[in-house]
Length: 282
Length: 198
Image 1 (cartoon, rainbow over the protein chains, first blue to last red):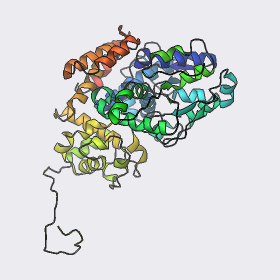
Image 2: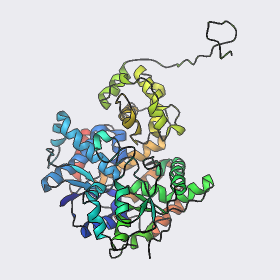
Image 3: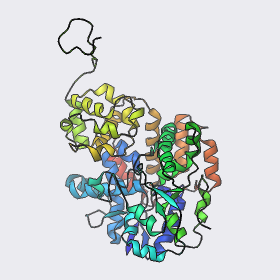
Image 4: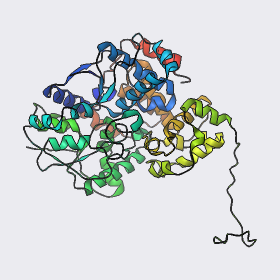
């Protein structure tokens, strides 16, 4: 299965662990990722916050490029997935805007390809296929699967998993031999892009999420979004200090856990660049 | 004040908050056009406020934002911190029983505030969004280091997160060389034709 791979801006810098582990896991499981040539930023939160048409046009350029490649788009970043999927829907339903945007593109988008989140294409392989590939089961590891907002909401646009009680990451963790934690803050917002502008708010939301994960007995938190990972990891120490409770929870990309369970070469290297230290397996 | 009084008792006083704002249909129509939402559908159930992760920090509660949008109270809405503190988490849009996407209404209010040049609270948040989109305009992709630099210069927040930044740099998480889009002209054309006021 070949996909038009859209890394998005952060996978080439602050979320490099996500890119490295994603590529390794997909290669190991026979999922072909062909990076979209000359892709541009999807616009993320800032795009739709300031201009609706811009927020559709920026992703649409990538959709046109993917259509030329003849492959569906896969985006590891939840925000990129959300914006691109939304643009896919808008381009398919708003003919006026579609015409105006396509007029600006060397590669117009005609609705021939769709956008999928990384979690979905891996989940589609089936729990058995993943379990078969596991060499070092994550036995005894309790993982709090943190979905965040943009991978599952709004359901009318995305149509993936469940907006209130998603299970796709939990199923993957189970297939890896780990125990998904039973907790109820799976889809609570981490504060997103307020990381820089109002880190005080991110600290509060981070604390709310992680203290519940800790109370549920989690050893580690698994994420599928670069900004969620950054917030829960980089603001964790400050949050623990501010609210007076020790957290000490490693925040990993779900693909890092997959790479470790599949015993891929260099799987543990990515753990070093996280702020909160993790030592998974031996 | 006699809180149990149900009848038109004269004893005590009855407190009423009067909103000293104009009421007009103009703002509502602008919001409807930009957001594609049926603003009048909202019947004030409060589900949005109950689920909003940022409500604790907002000056106007999400459901009140909708009510003021219905009435067209432009000034307090466009000057509010609420519209900038919305995280775009889509919890409201997911749960609204009348299928109103408040998240889209918030987007519209932000767009109107910028277009009209309203100086609201949380100006640093607007500066962040502008620094982000400037970076996209420049290279087609966001080069995080230069975007951060632009944001810090614009807000004067030169020294916040210095230790965190140093740690990130040491761990190789801040790429110094920008990644560029070759056909950045096409991206810039998108901004020029559709990007509105920047």
